Structure formats: structure tokens, C-alpha cells
Length: 107
Image (cartoon, rainbow, N blue to C red; front, side, top):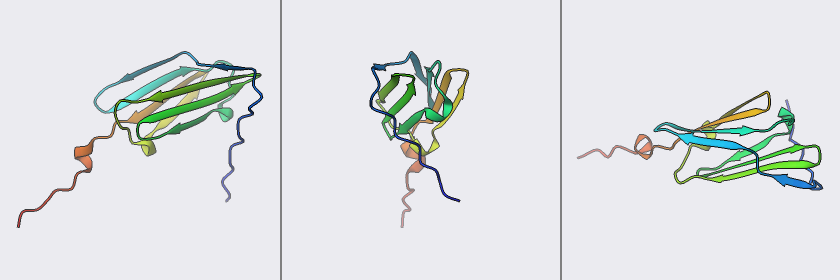
């Protein structure tokens, strides 16, 4: 089964808008909630890097854009998102270096 690529977002938009959003974190994760009224779920594009998050969501002749740089690392492969009634919720797990550390044996 072939994986279908998402179409690139058209660049002929008239307005680029930063959407209303909230961000909070605890010891385990960071949560981002973004208001995207009138946006179709299938048109939302997100990318997560170890310390950066980007969102692009077109609507009519407008493009919602959000770029967030974290002051800590996340595990991008564990990032998940839900979209319902114009509200996007993204959860990213914080990277915990000691959980990935190698235990050095003493000889």
C-alpha cells in the first residue's frame, strides 16, 4: 500500500496569521492547544523536532502559522495530536536523558 503525500500548502495566501494558542508543561510532557476555526483536519501540517515545533494550517485565503522553540528537548517520535471542532491539541513527551543512559558496569 502506497503512502499518500500531503499536498504542499499554497503560497498565494493573502494573510499569514498566528493563531491563538496556549502551552504548558509538567515533568513528563508539553501540551499545546491551538484554535484553528474553519480549518479542515486534513489540511493541517505539523512537524516536531527535538526542540522545535511548527504548524501550518490554511483556510480560504489565510494561513495560520505557528513556530515554537522549546527551552528543552522532546521526543518527536512520541508526539501525538487530536483535532476536534476547531481545536488542535498536541502532546509531546519531554526527553529524559537519564532514562536513555547506558549503565556502565564495573569490572
